[in-house]
Image (cartoon, rainbow, N blue to C red; front, side, top):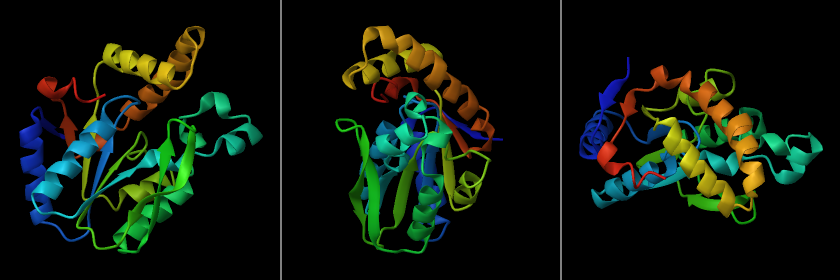
Length: 218
């Protein structure tokens, strides 16, 4: 059963305790539905741990989106964000490279170009902690489950549906979606993904909910 944590300070304290009792490098996985606040929380944790002397790097899953050209080739553009629109094998290889303390480029995702950037963040292999975030980090299908075996701590974040819908609307409008397209995108893609992702919340070590911090987690 997941440990319930409701305050950010409590979460940081818990993370530090687990880090000190574990080996190096330490991988933290933050999972949850689209627009749950995963990346904001991940960046906060990275900043916090770096300030405490840990060499910490942010590793988002979004960089492993298939390119728009790949999606178009397989008629998947309309389903972008679904589990089969990611390079799962590439993600698993990158996680194993983190564990092996290799130097390499971790890809990131551009919400301006709407495509992954191959040379996103440089991993030098000297980091103590990696904070990963993404929708499918706790999925039990292969190859995602292979990746999950390498996490020392997993955290699930899950705001209420009305908050998620509001955030998704703002995100998609900024990305160029028309108002008339929003409902179909949110209900037929995002919220269906959210339902599937929530099926895996019990696999997380920590279920995190911080009402006082919710405005930051967009």
